Length: 50
Image (cartoon, rainbow, N blue to C red; front, side, top):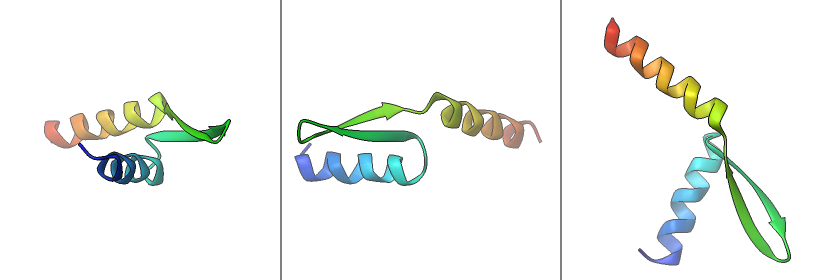
């Protein structure tokens, strides 16, 4: 994958709350937001069970 493709996908994850980010030494670090992922998975299971 290209850097641009990865940046685009990481930005989409950030905008939708699945990751947060922090700048350190001119580098952008992303952090997984487990509570948002867990919430989304639970919603998916509820949808599939109905």
